[in-house]
Amino acid sequence: MSSFNTHRRRVYDEGLPTRVRHTNMRSCLVHFAPYGFRATYHHLCLSAGIPRDLEKDPNSLIRAVEELRDARQLWLADERAYANSRRVDKARGLRQVKRDESWRGWQRGWGNIAYCPEPTLHPHEPLPAVVERVLRSSVLPDEAPALTCRVCGNRDNTSAWYDGAYWIHQLCRECGVSLAVQRADGPDPLLAADHARQWKEIWRLRNESPRGYPS
Image 1 (cartoon, rainbow, N blue to C red):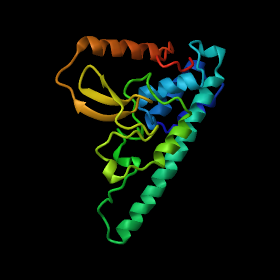
Image 2 (tube, helix red, strand yellow):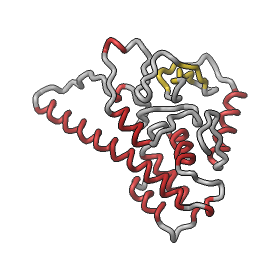
Image 3 (spheres, rainbow, N blue to C red):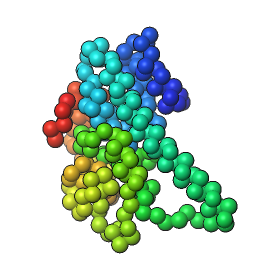
């Protein structure tokens, strides 16, 4: 698999067809997608103003990949600091991971530090602003029973979202971030098909946002 930086360089390569540059922008999301692949892609399409006809604004791909890169740089710095801290702890004989109140116990998968399962429901701010806030967040132990959103600070104000297959998420009503998840009783084929249709439209750059986010 090619690296994030390799795909980023291809986004900048004006000698490549615009569609290929677009594909490489999407490939960057395999390496880092703070809201999950689908919601992060949707966010970048809107925030960078990627048009359905890519030839109208190929520089929108550069705007998108640079916003993603800036957020990823913050995350990588945090990862390096954490790794250094773990090495120091191990050198002192403290091999068990310390319980902390950081975002690390909150993430859903590699780099998904504010997972939004519904692709069109996600924070509106630039990715670096959101990522930095999550990285600096903490939730005290006595707050653990509450569903506290590290992005917007919302507490115990959620709505249920079902993926139609396996999982029911409790989403923050303010920004769409998943605050809790539980196994669903059974599949809902019609709902799953509707989610698949919605994603196909997003993939084809026919983006809509039900929350008034500019498209």
